[in-house]
Image 1: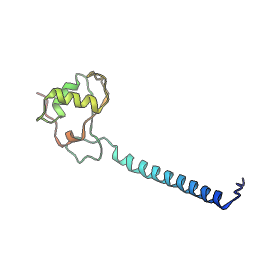
Image 2: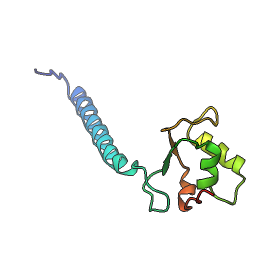
Image 3: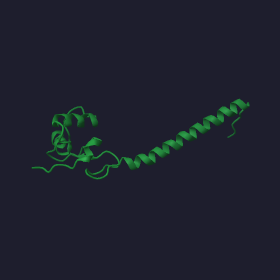
Length: 115
């Protein structure tokens, strides 16, 4: 395949477009490598490289997760609201096996034990 470029101006545009495409590909690959490392779910209390998460078990509710993992300085209703917004949930209903991401500020707190 041969590309015919008639004028020096077209050649300059061609080279600029190819260089821009190469730059975009390079940046996307770099972001993908960094993103893969930064998205691993982490346990609460460990140094977090990404958002910590909780897998919903039988009997869990968004309220219970908010009370167990959220900061004690805020009202549980606000914590439930924060979880709903952070996870883009339409309601506070959760399913067994569903992954709930915890807001980054919550990862500094260790969970309370069930009583």
